[in-house]
Length: 92
Image 1 (tube, rainbow, N blue to C red):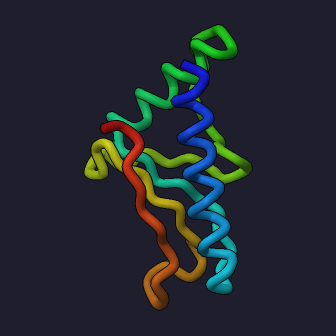
Image 2: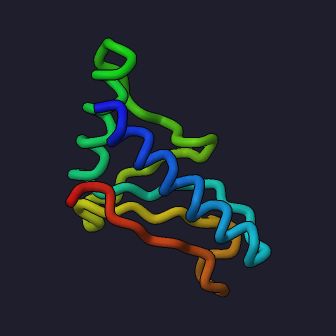
Image 3: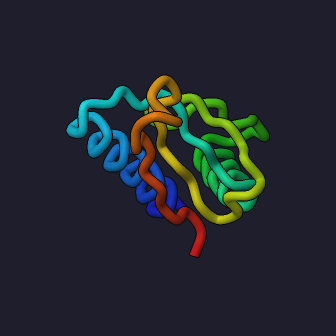
């Protein structure tokens, strides 16, 4: 449904903006396998086709199976020495 896709994109943008306010430059969304499949189904339903999702709200998408239903917006350059990540649940 369009509402689910809008909700996910809004969450990505919200978490990216929170990181920007903290002085970071978010550039990647780590997405769990279940969350990725959910997002991919929503995108393909909305736009047709069977394409992979490579980007969300201008951020690169990377799949990290261990996240399951969650996703994390990160600043890949600062991760490891600063709290440069914001996690959220995609699929409930």
